[in-house]
Image (cartoon, rainbow, N blue to C red; front, side, top):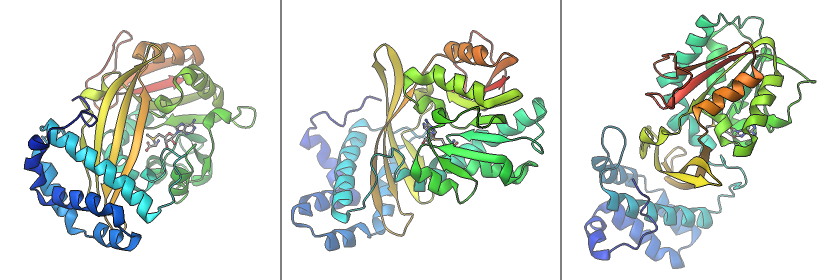
Amino acid sequence: MRDLSTYPMDPELLAIYDQEPFFCWLLEILQKSQNSTSENFQAKIVALEQWEYFKQSLLPKVNETGHVTDVVYWAYLRKLLIQVAALQEKTLDLGLNTSDSFHSYAELYDEIIGFPCLHEFMTGYIKFVVEKYKLDFSKASFLSIGCGTGIVEQHILRNYPIKKDQLLGIDISASMVIEANHRIPAKEMDFLALRAEDQQWDITYNGLNVLQYLPFRRLEEAIAKIGELTAKGGLFFGDFITSDHVRWYPHVMQAENVISLRQPVLVEKENYMFQQSEIINISKLDGTLRFTDEGKYLRYLPSMWKVRQLFERYFPAGVDFYDALSLECLPPDCESCPSTRYLVVARK
Ligand SMILES: C[S@@+](CC[C@H](N)C(=O)[O-])C[C@H]1O[C@@H](n2cnc3c(N)ncnc32)[C@H](O)[C@@H]1O
């Protein structure tokens, strides 16, 4: 679906949506925003019944794969929500740290991404790697690169014979590390600054395509760094997205307290490919209705050939690729896989 939100919109075409209670409310808020004080704006925002109106408006236009079927509605909705999110941030002076790309998202992350992904495919591939590669967690040191909120590592602590002091999570986002520290030992830092001279790890791991968030020119440096940080005889495992991940990527992700709206587009820059996703979250986590424009998340889409070649360069004992969901072994010349996520297991 193309991103229509910046296209001029025909008011007559939009008039049908203006009748819906949720759109009436959004428009009223935007119109009154000129002279709104923080107090009366907040009173409107805490109107939690809007959550139900929002769902009644949106969900009939979403199909079973999470894709919106009405492009005009989608463009109009996103345009209004971006304005209301900006107004809410300004009026309520939420003091968000916008230099941290996961600033407000960290709080919502588990509900909308962390737990669903853990249950849908990460638990499965962890069990698979442990069994197939005979991982002995009882004596192993474990480094999680880009640990996020630490839910995957908490799952490992709860289900495998590894103790907290054998495990460390590293994340560059301060907000993610605050969440992670409730669960695991975690440090805020760029993993590229870790030094193998200080410590090597028996098992290194990254969950949910961490390496694809790095500046794309640093991919080889990142894989070389993971190679250095992994002890001889040790193993790395982690998942990646394929270059056609957009064919799976839903516009709408729903959880009990969060609805996440996502507009993905493929972007070419300097002859490299990226998936850019603009994310707006609507949440009622803290008992109020919050609209957050999370901005644009860019993920590098290197070819699977390139990723394989780089891992083979720094992990001489062997590299295997699997579909991250079905765990079917992927041949060396493949370009994608059915689930659009793949698991890399690399032995040093
Ligand atoms: C999609 S999240 C995945 C989080 C977590 N691994 C999970 O499975 O839920 C990607 C994470 O990578 C982190 N990250 C990105 N670049 C990093 C870097 N250079 N060093 C450490 N963490 C990084 C981000 O802050 C973010 O928390």
